[in-house]
Amino acid sequence: MAYREKVSIASDGKRDGADYEAIAESRVPNYSAAIVKGSMEQTGTPLLSAEDITVRIGTRVLLQNVTFSIGPGEFCGLIGENGAGKTTLLRSLIGLQHSPHGRVRVCGLPPAKARDWVGYVPQKINFAPDLPLRVFDLVLLGCDGHRLGPRWFSRRLREQAHKAICAVGAEGFAYQRIGELSGGQQQRAVIAHAMARQPRLLLLDEPLANLDFRSASELAQLLGHLSRVHGISVLVTAHDINPLLSLLDRIVYLAKGRAASGSIEEVVQEETLSRLYGYPVAVIKHGGKLLVLPDVGPREGEDGCYVVPDARSAEGV
Amino acid sequence: MFASFMINTWIAATIIAVTAGILGFFVVLRRSAFAAHALPIGAFPGAAAAQLLGIQPLWGLLAFVAVGVALLQQLQRLGRRDVAAGLVLVTLMASGALLLSMTKAYGPGVFALLFGEVLGVSSADLLPVTIISAVVMVGVICLYRPLLLQSAFPALAVARGIRAGTTDLLFLILLGLVTAMALPVVGTLLVFSLLVVPAATAQTLSSHPTRAFVLSVVLAVGLMWSAIAFSFWTDWPIGFFVGAVGATLFSSARIFRFVRSRWRSTTAVAPSGPLNPAVFTRPT
Image (cartoon, rainbow over all chains, first blue to last red; front, side, top):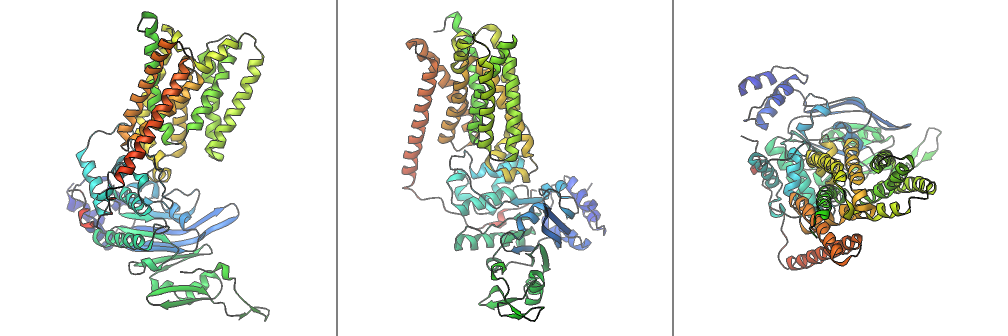
């Protein structure tokens, strides 16, 4: 089937996974992200949709009816305090979380069937210094690490890995032992691993944590480039929104197991966040930065007494 | 040294060394050295049980190894790997102590199982060694990439759809098979040495996974051959030479790496390259 016919399948207005599945199953070599992005925008189908995600561990409700979607090429931040459920939500999106309720679709498919479309970068990256693995080897494993049997020499695979390494600026240390690299360099290596199969969606769990200011800024710019230039949708979890402010198209704000999603202006406002937290919060904008604080001024309680909200529960964004 | 009565020794030792080098690469990579210690130690009472029942020691070893693998797998799911290995070790050892107390004719046999009878390998012993070795080699080659990714970064492996529980179980089964195969020939203590020392040395010397894998096998064979040769010439126990040569190899590798890293630190550290997303294009 010719490539144009595939695009017309994707553009016929269906909202289920059939159109993406048709593209995924085709082996059309000249398959551009920009064209896929265009086809998805025409159909109006989000690249990632999560509907009413609820996760319970024992009697504790971690996430409650979380709903949001991400379009092709969008840069989305998943923001929330430590323990808000960001990692749990991310794991639910790729089918790693046990028994979440709700519906997740990636490119119209269940997460387990859409693994080739998703690149995942976990939170804690710490390679052992003696690990006999170079960056290049890790990226190659991103291409075919799940396959059984020996790997025969493949020029295509090596080129694919090399492109992913160049895309994240890791050429300088591509052939160094990965355990001897700095935290920022290891982070880039894992992103290159996630990019190796040319995903449509990149999920990163706290990629900026434990990085110095310069490395965090460079990494944020890199993710922005990947999203804008290649049409890769990016979902980044963070507890500090500010390093990502200039890049974000939309955010999903998690607090108390609930979520609010939309543009930054829609979500990061006192009314929305106060509803989410369950008590008044103040949003302060200063020097292009955002700060969310508990509104610690005493307020009148139901019984007429003045109460002060629990400052420990507040989120400093 | 190459007399006819020694031929079986050389063949069996070489097969065991190659298999231990192959599997040992992943034992060290997955930080499962304690499990590799616990399984052989815990399995050797199986031979005592076989002696009591009047059956081949291999069947007793396989039965105890199977129990050990099942226990390890279940306990690892519940908590830390080292604690799981420790519990398996003491459980099987306790059972072994009970079984050994039931027979008085087993003293020399216990010593042989601890330190091996590599100079007394018969032609009949070669067949199970060869078959089990072939199964382990095929298994490792099939699982090479998933095992490598899971050992390097388990979370990435899970995200790629590799089932951690299944991979862990298959690896433990392979480790159990090597244990049961090698234990009557080289003994409990030498199995552990062959599984850990060559692989750890190879991983210290090479950052390339395939080269480290091959080097692990080469070093295991070299270690085994040199130990047999020294033992033949000096009439000292083979276990001493495996331990001494292994420790020398590993120490030398660490010193070599330290000197090399000091020398390299005088040159510039590779910088992060500039962002170059234009290079990343879809395959054409």
